Length: 232
Image (cartoon, rainbow, N blue to C red; front, side, top):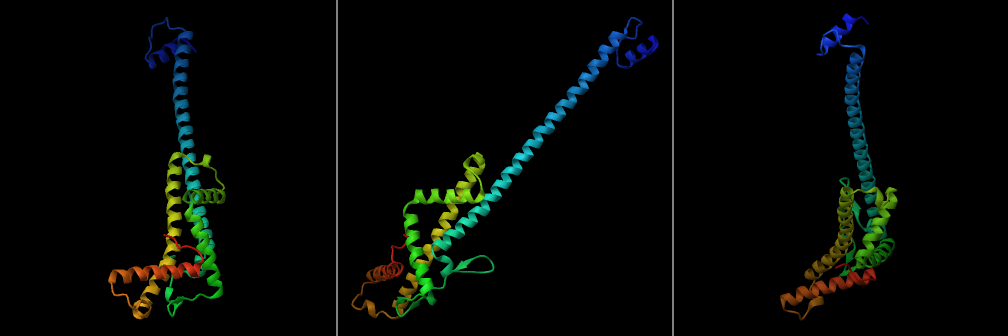
């Protein structure tokens, strides 16, 4: 590169165009330019890496949440089978479960087909045992869900753990309400039948006492049919 060329480049980048600008000066300036461009590239690169890691972490969290949702549904369904609900309740196309007590109350008594009776009896006993130990029941559910999802507690960050705690509590309560709903529906149907035919309550005139006897008698019959206490 000629001296005139060096002066031209020096002047182009804002340097001193006097003849004393040397080749070393020009090289130093070019190195500064290259270093500045390299710094920009490095900053952009590390920002890209950080952004990519954040996206990957969010994808993992979303995947873990989906695994937990499916595992919760599977565990809840397993519990419904354990409590005999699938033998007594019907599920509509919209996913809602219903129970028709009229099919199982005849002549002031609970009448169940052999298969339904066995499912009802063993299911009520299992439900009462499980829900009598709230802490143990929640721990068993949690272990079953994590096992089904192939996850451990260490795979859950604080936000996902909070969500899981609430979702788990909700599913446990939903299944409890299904069991309780079947039991109370049978009791209510018995009470309605006795209102239509009050002969079992002959001699009782106080309305409050009648209501109390209806409730106690109906729950006693449900408990006898189940072979265990009903859920409170």
